[in-house]
Amino acid sequence: MSSYFSEIEPLKYDPDAEGLSFRHYDPERQVAGKRLEDQLRFAVAYWHSLVWDGSDPFGGGTFQRPWFPHDTMEQAKAKADAAFEMFRILRAPFFAFHDHDVRPEGDSLQENHRRLNEIADVFEVKMAETGTRLLWGTANLFTHRRFMSGGATNPDPDVFAWSASSVRACLEVTHRLGGENYVLWGGREGYETLLNTDLNRELEQMGRFLSMVVEHKHKIGFEGQILIEPKPQEPTKHQYDYDVATVYGFLKRFGLENEVRLNIEQGHAILAGHSFEHEIALAQTLGVFGSIDMNRNDYQSGWDTDQFPNNVPEVALAYYEILRGGGFGRGGTNFDSKLRRQSLAPEDLIAAHAGAMDVCAQGLEAAARMIADDALEGPRRDRYAGWETETARGMLAPDASLADIADRAEASGIDPQPRSGRQEILENIVNRYV
Ligand code: XLS
Ligand code: NI
Ligand code: NI
Image (cartoon, rainbow, N blue to C red; front, side, top):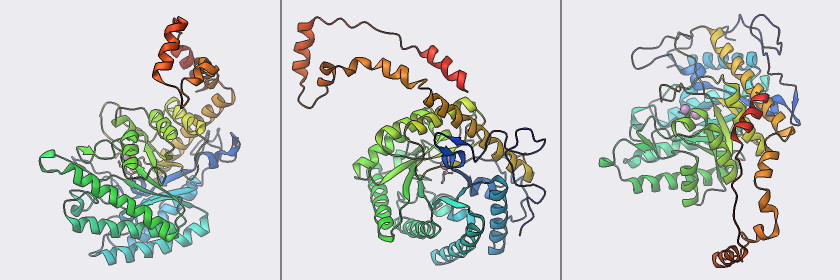
């Protein structure tokens, strides 16, 4: 057993503790009809917490984890030990990983898959011992130089084939570990310049690829959700899975809108020029909401800085849209968040998650109270009350015509009077809850 976190006791809900504890997140508390743990469904992201070494464009790794440099299976197993120790300290019900996070890169597809399966054997035992579950698995189709020009959208068909093999292996391991979801984040599916890019061909490749992933999911009996994670740019200048609306159009085009849902990340929403709650609400409306990657960006840098969330009002509005849509089904709250590179100590990793879990708990509880009190839904209903009359509804009926409506409008002498949208009053109401 690794002793990386040995100084740290498993966290308890204790608002008055002196050291590390949960100050708001009480997993057992009932909120909106469920235990808080079952509402929030927290997951720790293997990559940021256990793989990232603190490097940035100006300097190498600042973190010196005992399992670095992660090029032997022995180190991969030491990392798995530390990972599960961390999950236990955090009482995290779930985790999430890329193939590349958990096994060192081999020199062939076969060797990669053999290593992945060997680590999955280790995970299987640890998951059974600790009760930790897998929120999602995913294949990393962006780090190795072979993916420089994308995975499924690569101009080289051999990279397409390599990607197919990697996704099959990772999907099957996710299935074996009882994963709730399988994620495809666009990685390098996008372009740097139109001067060398055949847009139509690349989108066709991506559509076929995704259709085959869905087909394979059914073939092996995987019951989890297949999720696409939108992002507008980074690493490529233009990512194909730009935002929720773009992905929905793509899914419609390939007839996959009932097969694939979305994993929405706070930071990516902001990069796309949206709020997190907008992206969640739109996905709910379109029937494709799946799960979330919880983090935040630095609002000055304009980049995907993947910081831990620490803004309750922001988080509350996101959970409001999630609860309004019925909560998470198989999805959850994955912390796609990383430390700042000066936060070297094991304690920093625990404190970052604990603080973020508290922020999410506060946000979700505020959202649940707003719903229970009808604080926003009441005013929203009032705003649309005019549509409750038979005449109004009739305008949207399949047999209504533009001409009928126009004739009636002209004959009845209507004279619409604008009413206040009451935005500030509603903002004041929200502030009473957060
Ligand atoms: C990168 C993405 C990535 C996905 C998993 O910006 O957020 O971490 O969540 O591949
Ligand atoms: Ni993400
Ligand atoms: Ni991201």
